Length: 155
Picture 1: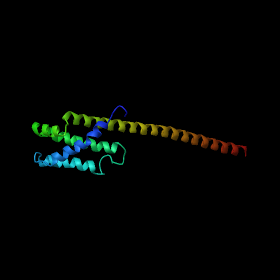
Picture 2: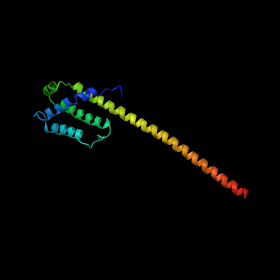
Picture 3: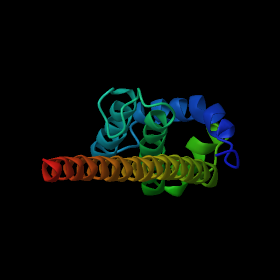
Picture 4: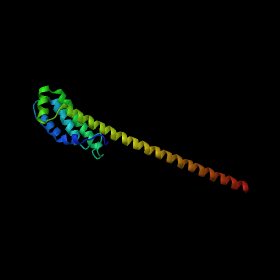
């Protein structure tokens, strides 16, 4: 995770929030676009989503990913001049937003893969331990059974 620096994205979040607010409060967007923008914002602030906010980092990353994806989609749908005006007002570019979205996706992917790898290793260790315990139990049971048989033979 050290090779992905999310700090530029985090520093731009207030600009993204202002851009979204500005876009939402103008007459340039269609009702459908405003609805999509509102849904993206609701997802960001809602505690109920795909990855709950109480899961460190990943819970916040999914909110950023959804919000930036919605923002990027709407910016690509509006006229080039309106898009230019919005972006210049906040000193942003489409490439910046797309890059931030990509960076957040890559970090989420890496975190998820590491979690899956760790879980796999834990299952592997647990499986080996279970097998050893089962083998030890079976061996102990066999020894006990052999001792019983041997003791009955002596009698």
